[in-house]
Figure 1 (tube, rainbow, N blue to C red):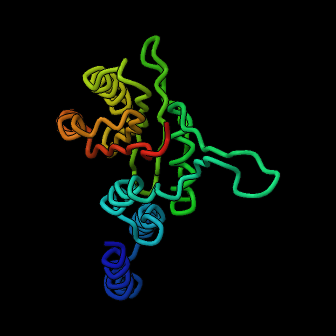
Figure 2 (cartoon, rainbow, N blue to C red):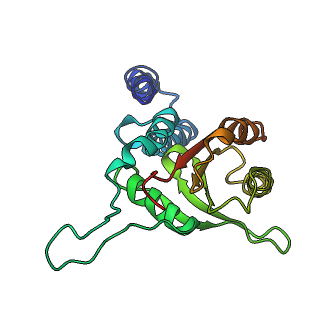
Length: 215
């Protein structure tokens, strides 16, 4: 898509733009219009995702996190002499958010976390993660135990999504829901994903199970 834009600009420069200068009727109004068009094109091209990543590439990447947690550090005994046992704990939403930021920041240098939105009445919405180059929001959730049902999570996510998308700047953004399920309730995941993706404005739902060796 980016190449197509560049090709169109190249054609324009070598036909319409060139002919306009040759034409004695070339005016300041035409020049102003050209500057406006090129300014818009430059801004558009500058937000092309790094390394050609698409929204689908991002979703595939996030979906592959769980299978690659087999090297997650969770020691039963120290690995070196005199060392303490090390275990990477994921205890809350902020830990999941930090993990995703660490994984995504090298790929998307423009990623933002804890992005505050304009207040809606007494509510002060805040986006967990935002990737401007893909105009994509990532809503992070954490299920610690069975005391919070999946239906409750769906209700919370639906409310959050409606707040994000009510903002003029993000009304057309894509939304990914990323759930870290510490309970590994895999029998519920298909229904949960179906429910989340049926919510207006949500484009994808990804569930990551904590590694089975974490207790």
